[in-house]
Length: 357
Image (tube, rainbow, N blue to C red; front, side):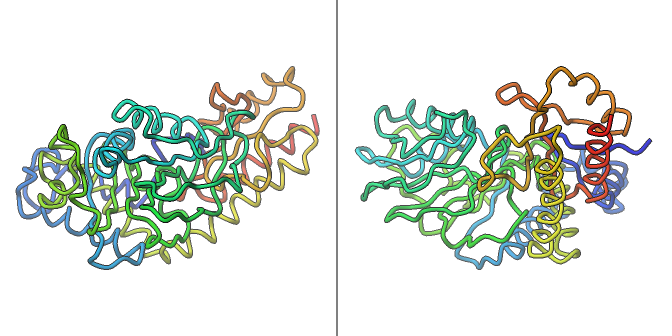
């Protein structure tokens, strides 16, 4: 039976990407060796890193005033990396708290510089079911930090208030899913395992002019973005396989119309599922309509006593990864780039059949 993977991460990838990755594991570039055993200093592996970086720049429409890094550590490592690189000795940073990962970013900054990380606004009062708006941003901040999409709760920022400071955004779960004005940001970071590739690599997009601004006397070498850029993501052994799969995925994205075409497909997928949630009396959405995510769709049963019945139906249809996070309950359909609209239709059909029982 065909499986329909709605898991929140690691993500589904296109069949062509899986096939290319599997072939490289068996033998890489006619070398008689698996990609997994080739040195990261080998010229063919260096070429993979360079292509992945260039394709990321091309996909986002960036020039050579930005640097692209593929590092280990996950996006969570950037929670410390950002303040280490951008927060000055007596400076302050502003954070919009829209969910679990934004909260963790604030906590990490506060560990490094107690009292210097300001919470600009928060939606915690309603279990992060909306995106705060109309909040004030003090002048003179070292940077403002946003989290564009909230994987757990199912909200997504549609607008990003500007400030007279550097702009940082965690785009882990919606990078490459829609067009963005990257020039508005000084640092964008994203764990690979949502729309880019397998877990193990983290993408960093860094404006060159912000490098070397750190005033911390305790900067760990690995967290120094300036040194990472100078070493071209090879300050230590990079996650070669994850970068290779990311490169294949970016090739596939570009070949299929780029981010603009992907955004159109993602809008259609989300519209199909949200329409069913809104029109089907057996279900309701978990977040404010205007803040709904196109990547992570959260919804609830109106009659929780029928949970076992619904679970049996979607599992029988080959659907996997649908249960919601414990912080929200209910269900979460993660509909990342590679998930075809046909899988959305399978879920919608199950929801309709459930309502008719």
